[in-house]
Image 1 (cartoon, one colour):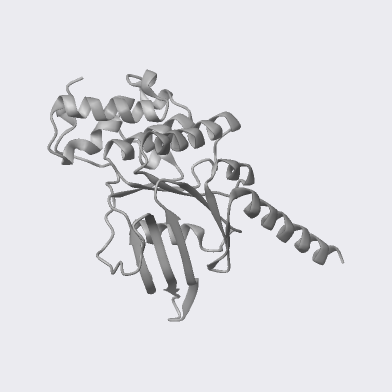
Image 2 (cartoon, rainbow, N blue to C red):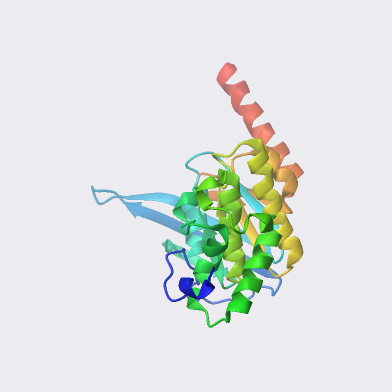
Length: 261
C-alpha cells in the first residue's frame, strides 16, 4: 500500500489540545489535574442544571486510572471536559498535551478499509517520511497486540479488535494522554480483556503515556493503578482498585439494606 495516499486528509479524531491554563502548584509527575470543576447546562426554560459540582481529581503520569460511578453522576461529562470537547463552567484544568479521546463505539473512530491504513490515516497532518509512518504504525499495532492484523479489512474485526485499532491510531500520533470512554461496554469477555491489556501494554511500552478509563465494570479495577468514584457530580473516593471496589460494594449493600428495611 502506498502510505502517501493517506496523507493530507484526516477524518480521524485528532489529538485534542488543551486550552492554555495556569499550571501553578501542579507537580511535574501529574499528567491530568482538575480543580474545583463545575459544569451546568441550560434548559429550554432558561434554568441551569448542574452536572459537575466542585469536582477535583489528579492522575499521576505513566499510570492507568479508572473512573467509576452510577449513571448520571458526571463521568462522561468530566472526561469530555478533560478532552476539551466541553468547557467547564468554572474551575481550573491541566492535561498533558497532546491528548486523544477514544470513543465508546469504535465505528465512530475507525474509518479506513484496512488496519494499517486506519492507523496511518491520522499521521497525514505530520511531516513524516513513508518509513517513519511505517515504523509508527508497526510499533503502535505491536503495542496493542494487533501487528498480525495489519492487512486485515476493518469490517472483518470484532468490536474489541476495532477498539485496539482506535487506540493504536492515538499511539501512532504520539499522544501522551489517552481518555477512554467505556470502551468495553458492548464487548464480550475475551474482547474486554484484550482491550484492557492493550492499554496496559501501551503504558508499559512507554512510561510517557497516561490513561484515564471510564468504566462501569468492577472486575476491570484489578488492572488499574488507581481509581476515582463519583457521585452527584463530584469525586467522593480516591484509592487503589481494591479499596474502590470495597467502597462500591459497601455502598451497594447499604442501599439494599435501606430499600429492604
